[in-house]
Length: 160
Image 1 (spheres, rainbow, N blue to C red):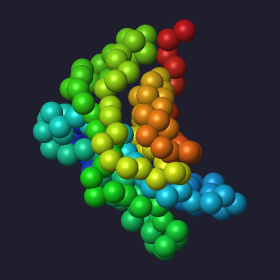
Image 2: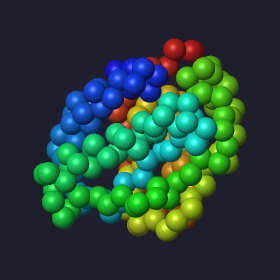
Image 3: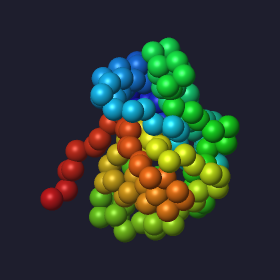
């Protein structure tokens, strides 16, 4: 489904995926305090031009809409301009092998605006974890005290 969203304009799959994630999050945070801000892992502007949209931004919008219905004022905020920006256009990650992904540059992203103390970092798929790890470190260095990671899917490790 995620592949179809990213490469075949399968936007109709976004709603059920974000609905399932929001239901899971509502249960997971039932005994914990909700975070202040939701930040998505952005695509580079060149990739957005190729696809004609940023899937993580679109998914985030749907996810927040679902959460707002249940949480009201407790719902995490989303800045008008995502405070995380991808600085360099790189080869698509799905085309790289695991070891090549792990070797990729770590300074591909930057924080361009103030962030809250408790944030969630959202991405559609976590493969090696290198993007999530890099972005989490940036957010912590920029002032976040806690970064929760939200993903729709996790790819299995195929290489030993």
